[in-house]
Image (cartoon, rainbow, N blue to C red):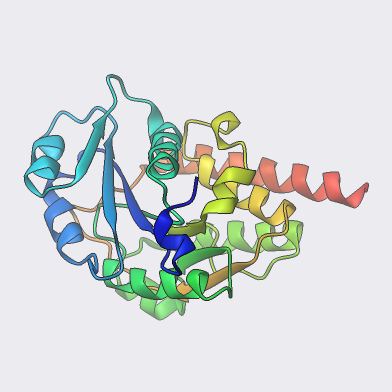
Length: 245
């Protein structure tokens, strides 16, 4: 159920933080979230062994901790379910590793609130020079560009990046997609974005600065290869499914 604020003209904005060993970057991330346009922050911890949960509570966040590790996709499933239960009208998913600039949340919210888009993505790929200067490893840049190109070709979109960890959704998007049936792993994001395209939701983008550094989370090469292969398979399935219609 949507919030009373939405009925009065002001949507309820909830930021969800899917966290796993985020102790070193959480405080900095939360400090930059613009509280004048955010009503609630929910952190879901995926059974970390560090002080992520204790720190989140100290920061005054609403905290939910998994009793076992459910994976990146499993974490997001809990995030979105809790946000919907709280009456959110706009849900912002932000990685708490400080790779993305939380101060840009106000612009994501405004573009959805004012009716321009249903989904907003933070694109780290504005120029090759900027991405690499921000610390993005070369192999990740090449893989990101190649996969995004293939996903655009398969879906008919023209998005700068399909692999952003900063996204915002209008409530009806989360209500329309049966995301509980998606993967519990990293491929969740690609599945979800193909589903938004299939359902005809409007997707917008905002360029965000690239910030790779030692404390920021990042999947290793083996997981990256698995993620890449899974993404390619999704793109192929989507293409042929719609080609035959």
